[in-house]
Image (tube, rainbow, N blue to C red; front, side, top):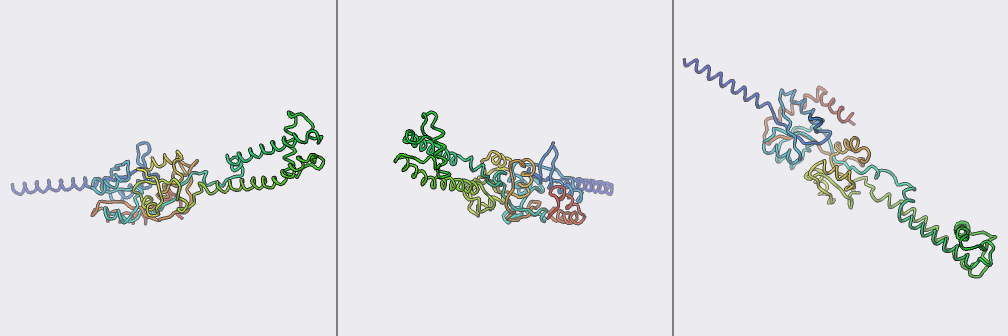
Amino acid sequence: MVNMRGLLLGLCLTLTLWAQATIAQTLTVSTVSRPPFSYAENGADEGFSIELMTALAEALSWDIRIQRFDQFSDMLSSVETGIADMAIANISITAARETRMDFSQPIFESGLQLMVPADQTRSPSLLSALLSFDLFMAIGLAFLMLMGGGMLMWYFERRAQPYFDRPANQAWFPSFWWALNLVVNGGFEERVPRTAFGRVFGVILVISSLFIVSVFTARITSVMTVEAISGSINSVNDLYGQRVGTIDGSTAAGFLDRREITYASFEGLDPMIAAFEKADLDAVVFDAPILSYYSTHEGRDFASTTGAIFLRENYGIAFPTGSPLVEDVNQALLAIREDGTYDDLYRKWFGVRN
């Protein structure tokens, strides 16, 4: 009887341990939407990080449950508090985060980059310079001066010079044409002013023409130069004085703080992109692969990445401090790198590595 009780007790204990072990292998993985690493589409979880996590779970015979958060900070908090067994997305491995959680070996090499409106990467054209408001006002003023000078010459020369001998309503264009030719070509020999005032005024117009042409040339040059300088962002040094945006608490925010660059802080990727699309930002500083994916997909018509990738960093899988799962994941990562699974996933989402 005693042996029977012992056998039953041992069987119950074995079943209990087996059930606990089975439950323990259904792990909660927290994430956040960061295309192309993690995002939800048609109710399914997609992205490089999601597929990598699925490959690791298959290698380790785990069942996983994806828990998607709206904010990046909430995803990290779920790991710190033990709500989730791990977190995966575009999580940069930093010294500050290492004090709060554990990380796997790197799963992706990344860095920061700049994104600007696509039209800022185009060179200014002569047409855009000519259509500027300042130059339009300068040209309008020149026309008024030529028209006024021509009509003033008509007033004094209409009885002395046959060319100007016509009524006022018919004289405005010939007078303007005479003044224009005087400024551009030096005037007409057969239409030399005959009155004393006309001759003095004609000399003044010829001398003034040197000034007028110089002003137009300088104005066109200055407008094109200003257009080329303003809004031209090619590196981090060009960000000072610009409307810059990034995500609060990100490595990009820390970088901008260290460089003392003023920026607008956003709680997530979607509100930052929305502000960029509304032209509230001149530039965005964030993770290079995420900006590159956006600028070649949803934002391909109005966004462009510019400059080289800077502040190189590695992404990793985050775990609660002291998690026993870290070593298992590291071994599985080595295995899928060796059998080519990792390279296949990389090529699928990012193309051939440089």
